[in-house]
Length: 477
Image (cartoon, rainbow, N blue to C red):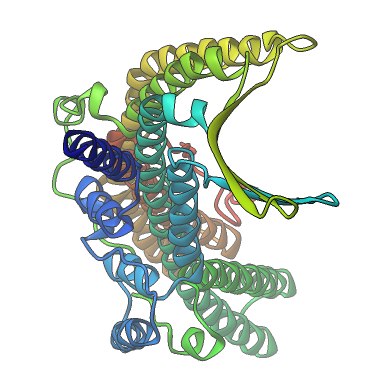
């Protein structure tokens, strides 16, 4: 008897231990660790400051830091930091990713057992039935589901890093557009003031008969054109600034305090070389790692579907009691019950076909990502290098030549060697050259932000080339 009890106790302990191991084996989500991993993988983008504010105290601390940043002109890095602290969209991105990871982890959990109680009564007997049932297939496939969940959680973490890199790249590019638009507005105001003064002077000169009516009309037309360009530049600057306000998630009060630098940063002394960019390892790119995890998860889920699509098994432990009123005694019965879903109408072929197709699609997506990685990086570098060369060309060649021509034409106009028309045409050309130089600098910094993202594995398209500067088209007429 003692031996039987000892064996029974050992069996219970083993059962409890197995249950504890099963529970310990369930996948879980440590979102703080996931954020730390993103800060580590994308350190150049998050500056280690990515965090989810889950409490009012945390939000208050972040709000104070955001206020401190808004007290001074906002550089590009400061704009990124402000968005990390202040943007509700980024906070929503983090929270959604947390939810996604938790949903993936849920797939590796064991379904709760079902307790059934029944009471049957006859004239002479009362019968109570109790059964505790759980999915046997859930237990059998737990290691498999655990592996799938781990891969899906890792996918969610990589997706978070990729989306954060994408958001930061957008913030950088929006900041570049806002500063460039403000710089062009400032220049348009200078041109307008000069044209206004010129038109007023021409009016006085015509009044005393020093210039003709035609000459005065040309000055007036130049002034009218400058006023039009200034109106357009002001709206463009406002639109670019508001786009930045939206990216940073500023309130109206914060937007009123937003200050931007007067001009874009100067070009680097030297561009990155192709060799420096090529050092990025293809296997460590975010897009490649994400595609590989997608393939692994699909392959693992395919093996799981091969079993679960065919049948399902429920195991129940029963304990019944019957009270015999006539005899005055109670009978107890124990046992188990197995429920198997018979594959008579659905053999699970469609589910297996679906998973086979998903695995095949994931394999091809991985191959496509691997093949495209190098090409996208080369294109991004080409856009970066082209932007740098064009911007440097404007800085070192076009602007100095335009300035020299303008100075020479002013001397020739003062010496009455050229007329008003030639002088105004030269002014339009110089305006076009300055605006194109700002555009070139803007394109370079946009391409620089895109290249940083492409090196990490988040390709971002960027245009190469210059938009025609206002007034440039008619400069030669």
